[in-house]
Length: 270
Ligand SMILES: [Zn+2]
Image (tube, rainbow, N blue to C red; front, side, top):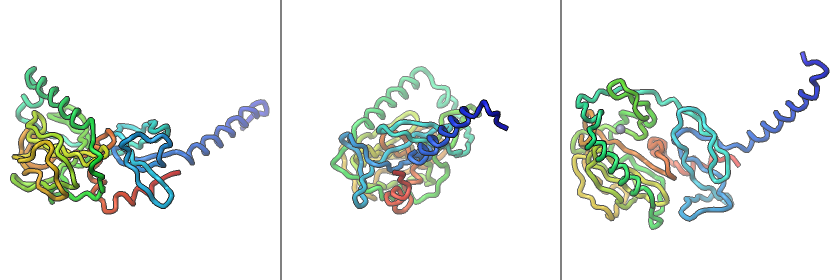
């Protein structure tokens, strides 16, 4: 029971509850690793991907992968990123030189990470992404986005990509129109291609047995990228497919849903 003398505190608390419920009505939230649409910012920077519905203009933003709920600020708006439990997977890599890197391998991996970062640092505006993704291989998902990895029982980073089943030599096809921005044979990801789909949307194809693409090549949707293989650090042939948008690795599985863009309108909070 409240004492008479604490009435003022009760009133203050009531006001706070009203304030909080008001703030909640205007809050924006989304799930870890997802792309969401928010009302377009007044001060738009060049290269923002906008969608229109009637008079409403929205901009797409990506939410980072988070290990617990996190409030972030994007374009002067508070966005609550909700944690999602994607589960965990334990893999064994018998070749321990691929887990405990020699100094030489570590330097190689570091240099490759710099190359990848550079490839993702600028995106073309000559291509406008349709966001109508088709699966790059027909195989089923063998490891979803966001799973916590344990390599030889040691916790590693979360799996921020989608693994798709495919036997050695299966064709990998461009899920969207693109320009090739990186081709390499990397320590972790083996034969790898990174595609730029425009406006900050990129995708990467790892562990391929081969590719004939070169940096600067243009690809229409469904054109050949390369073949499924088991190069780099792998336990067997499959496609490790990563999608980047707006500076974050995002969940590729969500992008394969039909009418992805129109589904974003339904989730918009004004
Ligand atoms: Zn993978």
